[in-house]
Image (cartoon, rainbow, N blue to C red; front, side):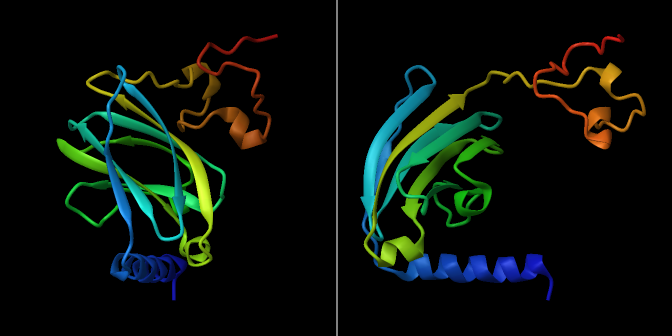
Length: 174
């Protein structure tokens, strides 16, 4: 059995278990000032908090969760769907997600089942930034760093990358 298939089966089982339990949920409408919202909350056990975000196709959501309990994650899902477009327990505590359709989205903050069963608590800070109709600048590598034209910085091939160098600027020859 492939690892991807096994992972899909495990995730389906986890989501089925989560959605068949009786859980307590709070829902909050996110108000941006002007494009940023910072929220500090707490969850315990099988509670989860839903944050409603209205957005348009092409908008980008930057979401960061800073939890006190490392079993605390978030998912992003369309309002009337149980299918997440971002799964925090797999992808981490930070998301940069470009929305494909207009509508309302839920940022759902929850505890993993292991922590929920033990009745653990997590204090967290959730930061949501919505880049609405604005192109988010993306740093791109200057072509002089890619001599073979494969789209990969040459330093990655030979292991010589240096985080102090700005690879968006032309390569200088010493």
